[in-house]
Image (cartoon, rainbow, N blue to C red; front, side):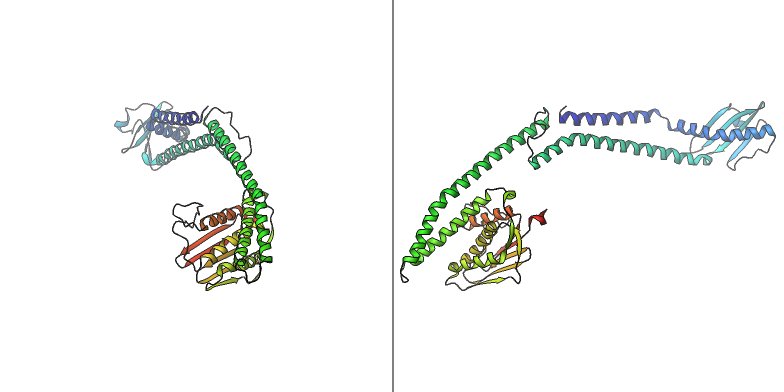
Length: 406
């Protein structure tokens, strides 16, 4: 049975039940029900009076009741034969005619004597309505649970990526959805496999030439005379090559699943101080002060290389694009902030969602660097907030360990 058919059948059954209830209510006459209830209530009073008449005891009736015999009965009541007779509101009265030892008696009661029956009948009607509503709610819950159960089971399987997905052989809409999920999941797995293979192959293929370039640059630095004009160029080649090697390592780690990363207790102050020392070339000749505010050592359970990549990219950008003022690093327990007095992020870069390639972005590399930072932050399970203006940028990292996230 398809999902559409299940829902349709459920509504049809619910409507059929409602119509049956309405039909039963239409068949029941409220006045007849009330008269029957009054008649049954009078039975006890009549039996008591019959016993009193037979024994010759006083015929005691309530203040709202009157007992007549054949001699003193009003003429208007003589026309009624044995049994119950009544008149509804507004001139409500109830008459019970009965015979005892060949004589006829008339028990007349006004409406106030049975006012409580009105409340009982109304309460019973309310109880019936409430029961119907509860039954409808119960039927709706069962129906919705029956309809939603396959969707819930399928969504849980997709979240756990437990294959094969259930209901792939079903012929209803759930089966179509399950097969679509399975196909899409297979495509994603193939895509991720290709991406990881490409990242791994590219990293391994580039490591060798980069190592050769770095070795050659380091040799030049040691062999060139101290006054050679080629020293700055050789130093820049060496630094750029080392940076490319670090970026390749970072990209290779990003191609892996976060669950496969080896996590250790990483002291962040040492990483920050190393990155500060490496930023000296970008601050040379500029009136910029680089400060570290870290009153105590902060250790976080994370991956050292990826943590280094985040700190280095943010600090390098801050030093590179700040021409005057200050770059301040604040390190607290579970929190790292890097603030500068530079020009702020370009308007083409959204601080909430960095994009790698933007049509009108500056081509200085900051878009790609921030994109890498964001990917690494998400990979580590951290959170990053950015505040930017014409007076500078402030990147705030909330550092959370896997135990805290769990």
